[in-house]
Length: 111
Image 1 (spheres, rainbow, N blue to C red):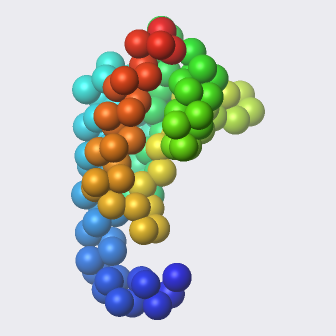
Image 2 (tube, helix red, strand yellow; image 1 turned 90 degrees about the vertical axis):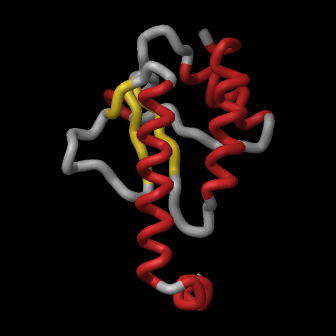
């Protein structure tokens, strides 16, 4: 993994993570969800969204898993009140766009 990181270049990798974080935050909000972390405390590698109260996150997670994608529906006190989308490591914008498209297809089935 370190070889991949250095081949890409650390600055480029950080920029890609920032671009994917921005895209994920925008997608989350466009779907009617809100961001869990306060501005300034948001991660460049993972976005945590607040459930809109209309979505069964356990169902959404299961449906995505059946199609080979992973999202997480929180843990502990925030289980099913949040969901997390990772955007780190070797993930690309194309990967994220595919995930967003899938989730848009599945969201009506989870509401």
